[in-house]
Every structure is written in C-alpha cells, then in structure tokens.
Image (cartoon, rainbow, N blue to C red; front, side, top):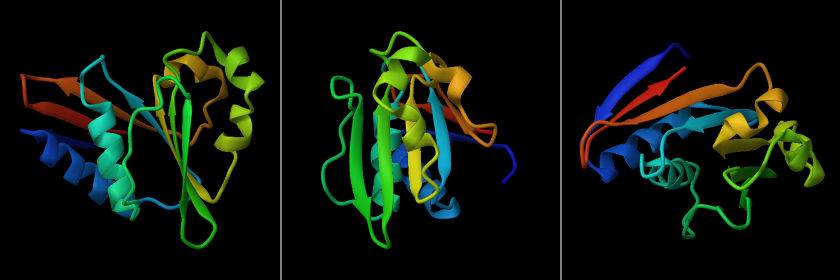
Length: 141
C-alpha cells in the first residue's frame, strides 16, 4: 500500500475512511495513529473497528490503556492509548511487546511515540491533521 492522503469533512467521512482501510489490511498490522488532542483519533478508531465487524461501542482507552476486541477466526483488535505511559519501559511493564508481536491482531496505537523504540519496522503511520472544526487531513504512510 502506497502513501494515501484524504481530506474528510465530518466525523462520518473519517470513520468511513478508517473502515475501508481496515478492510485493506491483514492481521499482524500495527498502526501508529498520530494527531493532537481532538484531532479525531477515537473517531478513526471507531471506524476502523466497525470495518473489522466490531459492533460494540469503541471508546478511547485513555485510562485503561488497552481495549481488546475479539474478532472471528481467532483474530483480535487491540486499541491502545499510550497518552498516560511515560516511556517504553512503562509499556514493557504491562507486556506491550506481546501485543505488538501478535500476528493475528490489528493493533491501533494512539500516542505511539511514547514507545517509538518498540515499534516494529513494518508499522504503518497515520497522521490526522485538524484543518477546521469538521475537516481533517488523513495521511497514511
């Protein structure tokens, strides 16, 4: 998959783009989701989860750090919010490397630079830029 850039004009378009992206990727995918507070990372995560077939509510795991969602065929979606993690050593304490190495999982990381030393070389980076109240630029590398 090459670099993609898309502009969305509301939350639904952001979620729809994320859902389409989830269908293009296979298990064992680590996605590093970059963006300021309020950029739309949780909206993106909800859309991504919906694209994987998850129907239960998806919220940001800011306080729990990780949310786990079971998928068919022994696959998983792990949504992590590393905002409250100091650095990669803190992440190692809760076993983040086991999640990152799971070839049957889709891993979406908010605030991924907290563990940049641990990110696999195959990590896909997604940047969400806040253009206006409702518009976002999403870049997938």
